Amino acid sequence: MSKIEGPYAFVYVDREQKHVWYARDYLGRRSLLTKTMDSGAMFVSSVADTADESTAWTEVAAQKIYCVDLNSRTLDGGILEYSWQYEAGGLEIGAEDGHLVLPFGRVDQTVDDTGPASDVASSVQLSDIAEFPDICKWQPYIDRLKSELTQAVKSRVESIPPNGTHARCGVLFSGGVDCMVLAAILTTVLPRNEPIELFNVAFENPRQAKHQSLSSVYDVPDRKTGRSGWNELERIDPHREWRFIECDVPYAQVIEHKPHVQHLLVPSCTVMDMSIGIALWFASRGHGTRVTATSRTEYMGQSRVLLLGMGADEQLGGYSRHRSAWDKRGPRALAREIALDVERIATRNLGRDDRVVSDNAKEARFPFLAANVVAFLSRTPIAYKMDMRYARGVGEKLLLRLLARQLGLVQACGLAKRAIQFGARTAKMESSQTRGQDFL
Image (cartoon, rainbow, N blue to C red):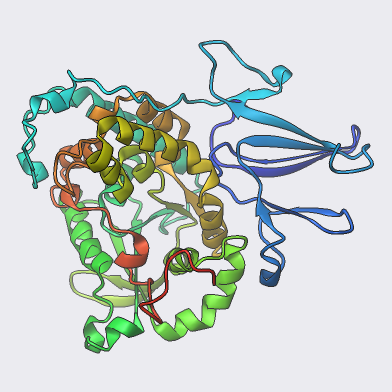
């Protein structure tokens, strides 16, 4: 299993040995749930059976591979666990020791006073990535990130069966730097005659619609950056057929499909889970309007594989808590926060996102979470990935922004992080008093 790279979830029945093996990949990119009934019966499934039993289902922990011994009379004594571990001081740890070896190491938390940040005056507040000073020290890291991401994207799309003149691969597309870089790399990998679909979702938010005209209700922040990003991609690769699809979602459709999406979320069950899940569900469904310079036509997405940018924020300092750690306690606290976030990726929300996207017969793939990308970013010093002395929209995910600038994405490289629930306006649809951690 240590040699398998990529997302997976499996249940394997060994009839001869009377064993049942089950697991998710070590980053938790595929959904797998389990529940044990009062009778002792155990269920393992990719989705829950009923939403009203949300408390009975739990996500299978991604850090282990489990083996149920059917020869045992009880589950308590009959489940063997094989844990994923980092390599220990260069020593190989194998399954014979009850461990599996992760293909990447721990995040390098070294804070080096001679790094690139030492060239910057402590009072600087650069607010435009275009004004970034000499990047000679950064160039090897920029080039390596481009190489690793290209390898990750290529391995995730080259096996997709040809689909005639139809699109094989799309991008969930807000116009932010994460998805822009993925799209810019994707166009270098796919054959020139294939279209690329860019799915941009926007919601009618009844609280905000009161103050807007019908024509502007879908002009949400992600729609504006999405259009800008689409234009930028057409500029850097005018020979590619970029299909920009505006997925506009009336509030009535949200109400109609909300119970179904809530079922897919289980065991996740907070207001924030719904805000993110409903956006991903409608975006991955791909129903919308294809926009060109001269026309607008109804469109149904063709791609069965979608690239998503999850994993970039955790590894490159994209969350506000990363800047807060820097502001309050300095670079070492930031390094610890990044290391903690990367270790928690497997326990967070990728299973939820997989359930939501795959419900539309689409497969989500995450190039930023490819083993080679995680390995590279984990051993890259913090100072070469981010520098919070620069302003918001520059300092966080700085390495990725510099790559975006090198790829010609001059507008996208300076956009600040914006969560999908705020960019697409799925947050606080009914009330301004609800909080993300409230239960549904």
